[in-house]
Length: 191
Image: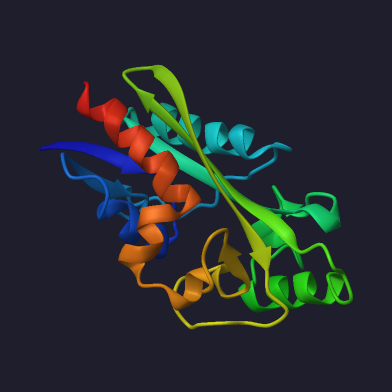
């Protein structure tokens, strides 16, 4: 089984992705003994995904991929968007982020939004991108206790439950990250 590094410090993301990728052993930042934060300075999720992958590829000479995701809310002009993890402050705080979204949407009728993911893969020096998106609405309060990030306030289109009310298996069938990851897996299986 070949090794590939998933460039993330988010254990929840690793758990989600490990369930989808079967032919590779997922190595994490921790396995590389790398605990530094890679600054995400781009103004797109694609740019930030590239920054993370290229940093690890160049530093450790290991095939790798990273993702960047964002919640894009129409009534907020696309916010929190690329700043989703640090929407409320420079230190990522899920509770503060959710509270700020709910506050900013108070009284707003249009609650439409989309979760978007871009995965940047660098394998043998070649870069490829895989994208996933899922539309939905933002709730007026938290629903459910599973998942992470904005999952408790996002109901995907065609469903009546938030991501946080779904099992990991249910979420993985429809989520933005699983859509992008399935594209990645299909690509890797052709290698």
